[in-house]
Length: 243
Length: 239
Image 1 (spheres, chains in turn blue, cyan):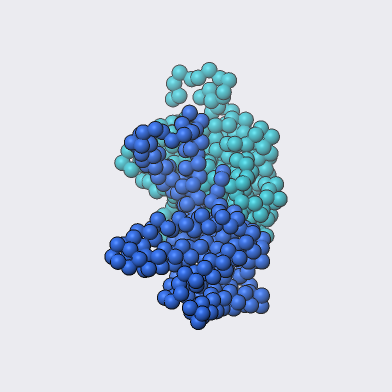
Image 2 (cartoon, chains in turn blue, green; image 1 turned 120 degrees about the vertical axis):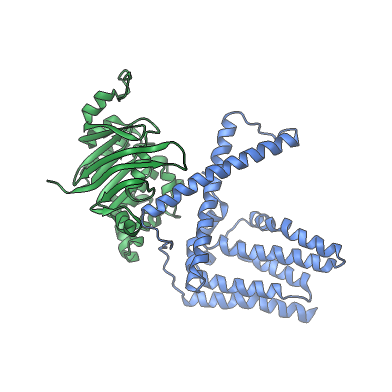
């Protein structure tokens, strides 16, 4: 089965992967806050942040172009708000919305691509994020795999029975086929999700997903957290002073 | 007289208002016994075993080690029954094989080092210790089955319930699994269509049909009576 790429990336072995999740979560929060509250010299500040994130991704040996493309998945949503700002006579705000959305997504993706989800959730738990939210996140994650697996099974089954490799000529036919497949996909995924849940209950699941990750916050983690938190703040001060 | 580990009386169940899936099943499993569950597809075998640890709850009575299967006892009952599902892919849900096998022991309150020791021991038992760090979805179907069995063994159950355990296993794998299970001291319920496997492992068998047990006895006799072998001519009537 071909699985979600992020899961594979997160199991890498770089220095960034090796950091305690908390040492990456704190700088992410600083990054997002600095970005969200930036007003002056936003394009320049965004460019510096973009370079910082690219450096982090390259350092973690994550395929850069693939990561940049995945972060762009937020753009269609951001574009709606940007378009509303543009149409209401404030194009600068529209650009800011698009820039901030993309960079925020890229920053979150950098964290997720360098931290296995169980470790990330353990870090969030240690930072007193409510357990209920974390359990929902873990279920969502697990069931994304279920949907992905079912979609791949269906795609193979369709291909094996001669489904056209190229898109069908008629967009109406394509839409009907996609809608039908989507309905079956969700019905099948629901069945699989129920089976997964039963398997969890059978082995004593009581609402809390255990993890084998023991967090150890070393001096190197503290140094990384400090540097990575200071970087966006320093960048913002610098571009605002120059601007 | 042996202590009954499982005692089921007149169990009835229907899915979502549809046709009855179980229509008055009575069953008993004694300490140290291994019993095969035969029957056509859709005859209620899997539905029946899902009642044993309260994953489904119908009318009638189900008792496991003297405990009625009801909400307040589910936690204790699920410690006693290890259920290996037909679809191993659904049973393996943690990111690595080791984490998955340790899931049950951690849920049972073991410390992480104890759970890891228990998980590694279970993986060694099924010959999968070399795969401990691999992602379950990178395993072959046979390896997934073994990892799923290890996940159950690690919980230290008193009763093993295996739903189609030989699915996806090649003949040497089936033989190895039969030998492995035969060496385990737990009582076993094995849902299977694999007659040689059942004959090797289970002295007693019951036969399900349309949601009821229509026969039980020595495995070879049940197989012969229902002509349940691949090379037998089909019986005119299964009753």
